[in-house]
Length: 212
Image 1 (cartoon, one colour):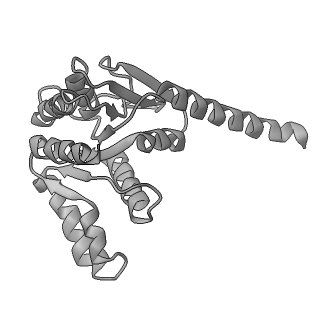
Image 2 (cartoon, helix red, strand yellow):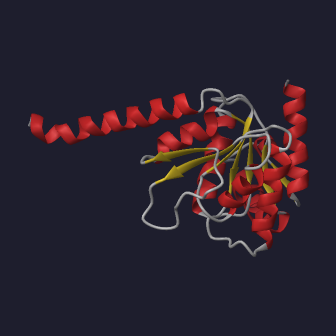
């Protein structure tokens, strides 16, 4: 029976190792912004170019930019931030497809476990920005909203870029989720939807300045 339990015991040690390494590597960070977005947008897409600009706008102000470290819009934001004063950070995850670390990272961490990676996304963040994305982006978005809603973290701005992309989600939250009293009307104020990355960066930068 003891031998059968050993793999689980070693898994706990691997989890602990990821936590310790992540905390130590990022311990000097403060006031970072975590950006989410799809891995599937290519370099020639308008969304990728907007991701590069977003990384530039934030990191030019000395704000560390954290992404999932992979390709697509994660790469775009890291790429924009990479030459700027603010650190460009990638929290990479082992996946069977899509995920390979992009080369635009001052700090590059690698995780086996999603929940450890999620903890790192939140630990140093004073703002979240969601670019167009799929299940992973939605997962991170609703995790952030839940943490703020339940007051498990200090409230920070959560900004979604692209009204055309996100308006359907907003309408569903209003017409279905709120209508059925599954959330309160005030919960809709926990996030903002804007059209451009310039607007998103302005909201985040202003919040950080007021916070200091």
